Length: 264
Image (tube, rainbow, N blue to C red; front, side, top):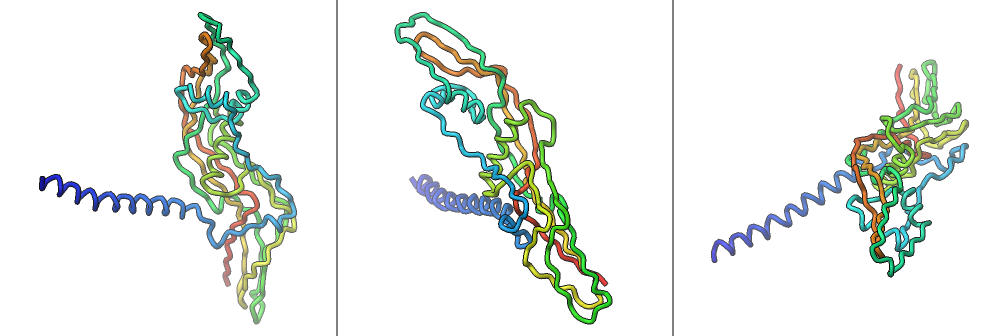
């Protein structure tokens, strides 16, 4: 009896500590994706209007839910879900003994995210310079984009169904970072930001701006999808399942990270 009481007391102490530790670890992970003070939103100032790339979450129909729920492998590919949404299947309840297996193709079925990080200085966008080495007092400088800058992201390796994979990776990265992402973003010429930087007398100042990007890593699951009909019942069957690791760089739209330096 004493042993049972002692075990209950130990569990009462350990479980809350584990919960706190887990919550702390989760908070730490979220903190690593927080926008730093050196990075600012330029969506209002950008002279090039980037089109929104936010991918809406496709809601599966009741038929799609039934079919994807019958598969042994999770199906999250929005293109395949759209095809199933647009389909209509009405098997006869009198179709006793009826059997059919319809090949729907080989698909990238889902993407499982393993790691999401942000490089706030992914690609250099611009450098502003002020030479105050002959001056007797400080000079103020601000950011101005001197030339239009295009920044591309992409997958880190060649992979089948790359466009479907990119969509699933971008959806997962957007969900985790809460940022607007795109595999291509533009900074328009003469884009300005009012943040002021002081270049002291006898100093040469540089203000370098960078486009940040998300580094997404994980695993894609592929499989051959069949629609199997047996009498009045139907289901999806996935065969020849394979997995492949993949990474991607996905630029953050309408954000710039600044680095200010002075030297004599």
